[in-house]
Length: 301
Image 1 (cartoon, rainbow, N blue to C red):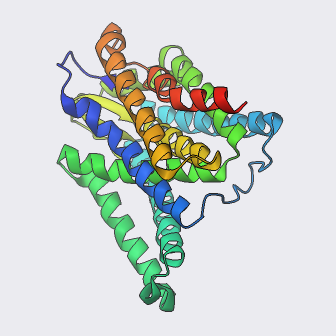
Image 2 (tube, rainbow, N blue to C red):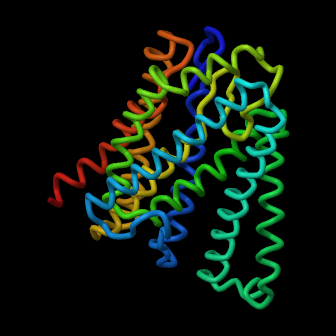
């Protein structure tokens, strides 16, 4: 999370980042309703639900994140803006198309949407059309709300896919490790340097990170943060339902997690962000948002 100058905290700063976990709750409810709550993660991840596999999986994720951040930093530092934007757009397109196609196909077959099932090509056409609209809105839209909705759409889909593809222990370790990683990378690592490097281009001169950052009136929250918010509320919903709580109770638990994220964002904006021009957006929101999961652990262990 970063801000370019001192600004008053506005409702949009707190509410727009919550769009991703809100969409995630709706998506995971749809998947639970059709019984599609587990898909194989595939290589390079391990699918067994053990602490050792979880540590391995999280290590892989963090290594990928470090490599990606370093690549972004080097390209921007060398002034290779067009090359970076090309790579960014290609990777975003892959993520968006694959996510939209997964949900479109899963819902079509899960809810027996016969017109689509009888014409499988229509599923692909619909997915590609939706993906193109999301991609365009996330990168080209001038309206902040439209851009936020587009970015939240694929962030929430990615978060839900994480929640149903990765084993529970991997997700628990991930929710602990990534906030710590965020602190280190923001204050001592590449993310802080990246923010400094980007400041050389001036506000608005190059929308370099559009699609990777939700920029709200000078305050930026990374897509990775939104993905983890979505993962947290999805995991909360799944765990409550798996432990024989009702849909209503699971929804309430996810909503409580959402409120925790909101309070965490407020604390981060109000008290941590003013210290420097940037701050980690994961530690406090994830900690407070995890309270329903922590409660569940205390009554089920």
